[in-house]
Image 1 (cartoon, rainbow, N blue to C red):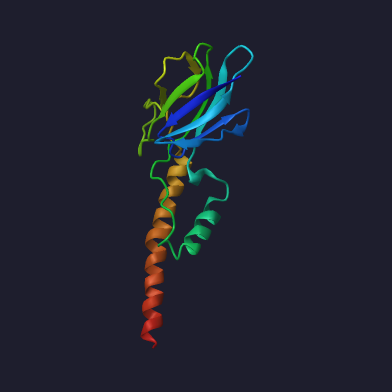
Image 2: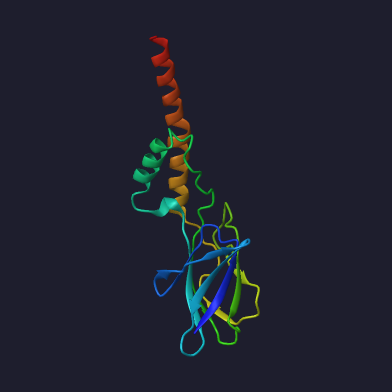
Length: 170
């Protein structure tokens, strides 16, 4: 048995079931995926959101993309929000084969103890989940500041100075 999971505002969230990412198709402004039901009718999956700056080799990848992107001009912009979410969701039987989920945009700044929900369900389903709020990721926030200053400010000034120096020799 399977159920239809409709997610709106997916953004940079990842959803997993049994350790494998859910495969979504886009229908209008929503994303739709088939989720497997357990024998008792429950649907279990994981919602995950983490910043690019929490990876192990974050500096290497940022530098590589910065150079490939012609010194940051064509490099993708990293999200300002570094909040993370790791939530195990268990939807009880009685959902009727359709589950509608709304994911929220992560806050740019979040304080300790502040409970900002990461998602809610539009359909009337009974859920059990843990860690349903955004949590601050201090390591990713610190790394994002380093990236901003190093790549966007200092290296552009150095690059501009090298260009001026090279053109002055002509």
